[in-house]
Image 1 (cartoon, rainbow, N blue to C red):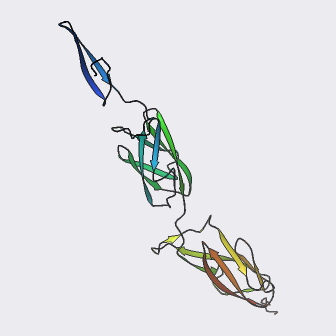
Image 2 (tube, helix red, strand yellow; image 1 turned 90 degrees about the vertical axis):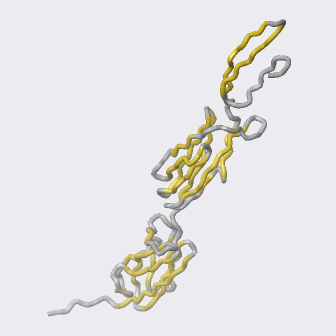
Image 3 (cartoon, rainbow, N blue to C red; image 1 turned 30 degrees about the vertical axis):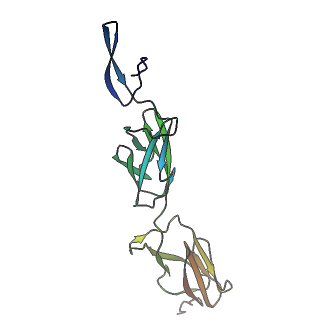
Length: 220
């Protein structure tokens, strides 16, 4: 409190202000409360991009109108869709965000009545290697036969991962011999050999396919 009676709040709590004039005094208890922050700033960014199964540390700062950090505040963190990402509070202004499933969700942060949304875009675990093969278990198919290419993919630790939902391209080196659809179905056209090139996330593999004549059933 100043000599002219101006009271300035310093931190939350209660204080007793005593005024004295001409040998008379009077006391008044006042409560100092937080003002609402003008903004909440998120670190490392307003958009987080973890992969499935990994975590990102999220930290926030409440800012006053003058841009200074407001000390002593607590934040709450809520995931709009925990099936995509969860959030666990690790401190007054910190939390851990974990990717659960591929997709996009929002982490809602609240400090008092001030809120902020952080976008979380969960990406699939990157493919480190993959092996293609024909569903029939061989390297050949008959003229007119259609067969699906199956892919066994792993991450950098060698763990199996699914390729559903990922961008995969297929290309036949000799389409007069065999064609391949965008879904990875190979169809034999005429006798010969072709190479199917498969690309997933910049990783390229080749699958050689022989097209053989149709088998003729024995005539009794």
